[in-house]
Length: 151
Image 1 (cartoon, one colour):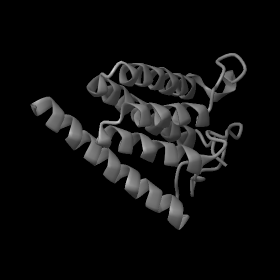
Image 2 (cartoon, rainbow, N blue to C red):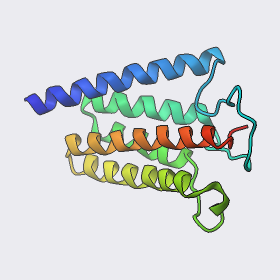
Image 3 (cartoon, rainbow, N blue to C red):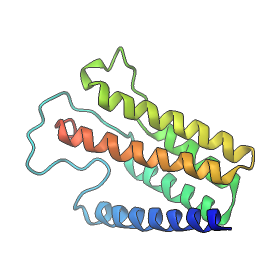
Image 4 (cartoon, rainbow, N blue to C red):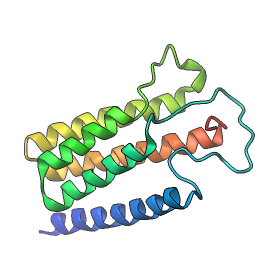
């Protein structure tokens, strides 16, 4: 029971963070592909998502799936996150740098593991992997802003 409480608390915190990010996107004040205000882009422009709103909606759907204990909904949301995020190739995209490439790969790996765990009914394990997905998202966006790759 304590593990379930911890998982539910983490989900609630994640949902609050997602709501704040969603409000920023809706207000135009920033968001998943927002251009940094003071940084002059130094490297090549990179598009982290073809459709940032679809990735945000998939993230919301994934959280709702976990809150409801609905493994299929969580798996579907995770699949849409993975499909909507950049699939970077270490050779082709080498100029983006190892940090960004490592985070993009971590997101894809954690998403696959979370989908597998949810498919086996191991929702606690799936949610732990989903937390890695979120950390990879945050890290990749932080690096892209730092390096002036978002335009």
